[in-house]
Image (cartoon, rainbow, N blue to C red; front, side, top):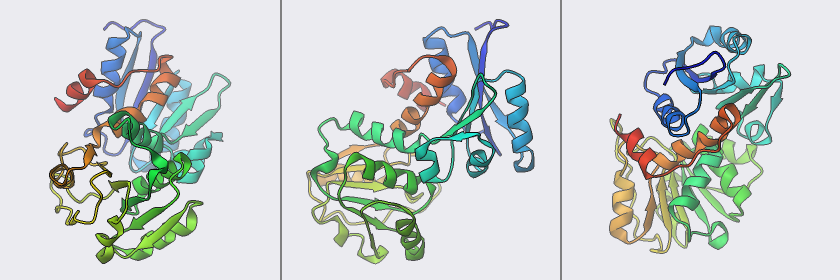
Length: 279
């Protein structure tokens, strides 16, 4: 696509950033909707982040996605921060407004929840407890999203219990911390099981968990998408549970930023999934 002098420009800032699927994802939408714009990868060292962001703003960029290690710093340089970004303590989306201010948002929780309800339309958030594995940054976004969706009981477990305890104390959510060695007992009566750890990811150890006590009516989700079908999802399928893979979280979290920068609320469909998976 040939860009005009009025092209809308956005990108993704990270260090490194070459692994990001965001340019391919946004590029698909830009082509699909015939938008005069582009989305580019921007490798920026941590010490240069603030200078780079203000430079982009001065050059007329519409905004940017932010990935590791800049997500917390992005909050500090913003003039306005969304409520969900404040709760999560990090931003993954920056919007440069026409009045010169910077708006910071975090769409990870939004992407997670949209992935669940689109992948399993019959699933109801208030139908029973949720079990969340992991207590990192992704877990924080997932926990907040589940609480806001109406989950009345969240059982949180992590290999390092102290991290789970700290996270539970920091969040205003109905969280009960469970010891890692009791994670299988925590599955009794659960309506949802979500893995936010790196266990099961390509190059990482497998997630060891027996699903015997998990109701077959439960939904099982893994935010890992490489591989697309993790060992947890394989076990859940054999057990008889519905499953939702992690790719949709990546795709849906991109929607609010794309709409803010390019003026179109894009559709997440099978064509997009296949295109992103090809690379």
